[in-house]
Image (cartoon, rainbow, N blue to C red; front, side, top):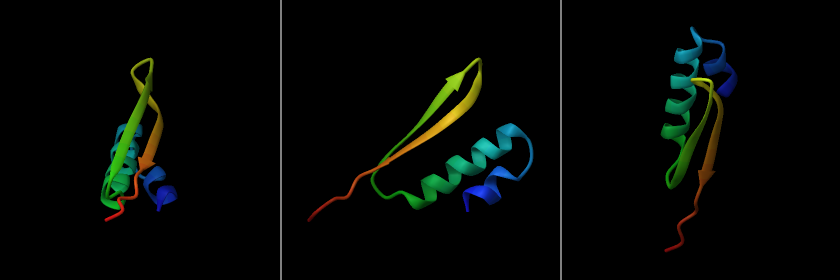
Length: 52
């Protein structure tokens, strides 16, 4: 899952693969990217559970 995406291609391709994977998995919530010196250093996923 995440390890597979982290092993593929250039750093930009790895980030895109990880974000795409999280977008496919999450139903409600948010995905935040932390950028330092023009590079993505952290991907934070916050998932919500909707009741009724």
